[in-house]
Image (cartoon, rainbow, N blue to C red):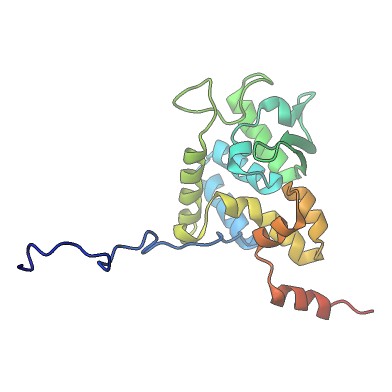
Length: 211
């Protein structure tokens, strides 16, 4: 049997599915990077993207919940709410979040341009105006934002925005229970895994706690 006709054996090497890809949890943004992205979007006068970015940071929502928010979820009496509540698709549980001044200002600027009623989506699809922005398009936008400020696209994604404020709160306070509530996790073990907390984190907290 010639090499040309030799059958493929079980030991034949196959390409690894994740060859050349970065796997694992996406990085959370640092405060400096948050402001860099805001500046990037402001310079280009991208009101929708700035509002979407700010809402993603403050809400800490999964992409599927973020893109389906309606104007009525955020607006009351012609003003942007300081707090809002959303029913999570994945868990079926409600989660509350705060909207700080930067997010309220960018959302108001966007909604004044966008128009619409309380039953309309905050971020409509540009293909189907009765639908909402797709999670796929949201992911593409995040890729564009992070590369626009010089970050590696492979290291960041939509979960980076979900994790950002939660990570900052955890680092500042060490309060896992509070972060669990803010992320809408049913179990604190999920929060530990999501934030990537390890032994070094735990020891650092213990070292800074005097009794």
